[in-house]
Image (cartoon, rainbow, N blue to C red; front, side, top):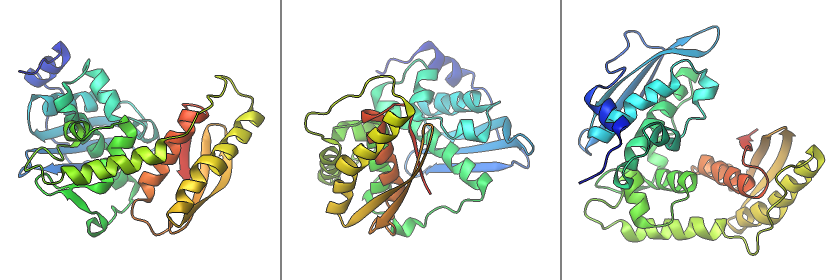
Length: 277
């Protein structure tokens, strides 16, 4: 029996913002009823301020899925689109006072629905699914999703991946593939004798350290897979890079960018945001 917080129970029994907005400005749909969880998020956005004025959800799933969806709408109402784009599944779980580890995939589903809604509002085309390699056929979980969720949440075991994505929770045939993906991620993230920088850096020292980490830690890893990277610009905490060589056409490019961001946050500053220019 899972232990739910009072906030989870409250938002499950009395969910806020349930329903669908008529004539929404943004729609995000993720999951599948066949696979057990599905979420539709609709947003109303002020055109002048790009601020979310209303958010509603329709969820097919368990108590944690309903509570996570309700929590998401409460979090993002009043935010600008830019602010909402920085919401993570950890933020959703923390708003609820925590979720059972076996139910963390519900917070991930919320974050993905928000991501899809923002993409639809911005007119960004979703990458063709044909490029995604499906690892878990029981729950239709792609390699891209497994890598992204593992990097964002620092997951290290197959059980972790199952808890956050449901991959591996069915027939189990995909578990060796999941383990291989994790080993690949961990091999990239492992650095011998890391030197942690001081908490406060001058701008010049920060720029020099970012360049050093890219040259010594990130570029060699990419070049080993026939890829490369160029540092384009640094604007305060924004690091703008360009992927080169084989990385340019790689369908996992967004995961690569996220991994670079994780590495720079680990070794330079935890407020760094990496963007592709």
